[in-house]
Image (cartoon, rainbow, N blue to C red; front, side):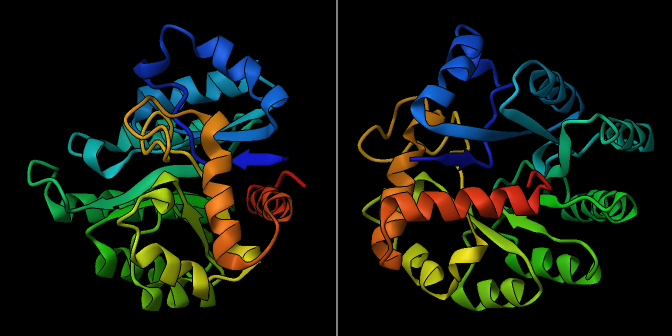
Length: 255
């Protein structure tokens, strides 16, 4: 199986003890490519550095909604400069998160999301969008930037929202939760998503699939997500892996 994990946080402290060993082991496990998205300025820099050390790793840089409360124009200028690094392929992880009440105020999240969409538009880069319990506002802001494309990571919206994004050229990311018993909406979303718009992700170290739920996640578990999606879509596992690999390469300009 040839796999592309389009969203994995190997810069996370969860990999502090064995980061290099895990990353070095991925190609032999069939994971040909990985995108590591930053969540703030330090993690974006760390992701860009990792990408330069491992041939199969690429980076995205951005400030995630949970981390945007103290974001300054200087921080955004630094993100923009990081985009010039040769293995930075997207602006992300950016977006909105209304789930946690302690998150930055919603108007701040929306402002920083828009500013980073502007950077992506100026530089012609795709984006990786985090949308948790903010579906209406996230879709509305995406619609404000018709020139910008990307992926709604770990998509949790409705099939109706999925259709709107797909109509506008976006991709949808599917993660370990598709393997959970309570995955009710995900099969409906997968049903309306054409094969050429599906990306597969781990969100490592989070969202570990069954049968390893509860453990630290890494890209070697990605095949469980692929196997579930292939059953839902009625295509072979190897074929879905190949298709999602090509989808990721197309979105991130790695063809």
